[in-house]
Image (cartoon, rainbow, N blue to C red; front, side, top):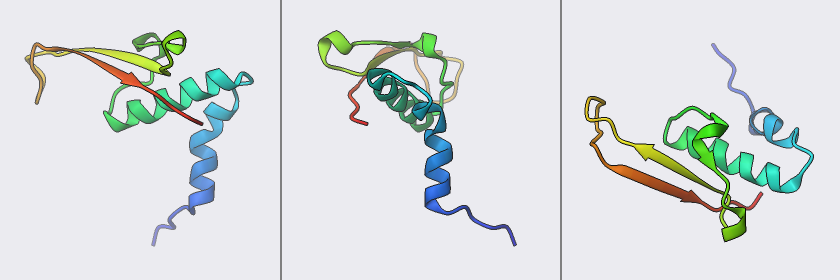
Length: 85
């Protein structure tokens, strides 16, 4: 029987890359990007995210739909994120 990790261990592992950042605003942005990218199942590549700190948002993500992908269209979608970490 496989052992299920406890919540504290999982949280520490998941946040390890976020907590490595020394700057608080970078931690907030990285936390939001990581959570968002796992939610919509995309790569966490930083070049896909745009910083919008000067406008009070943590990030923006631009998605260009591909009609050949499942459940997609040719629409262009901007996702804006606000995070508190």
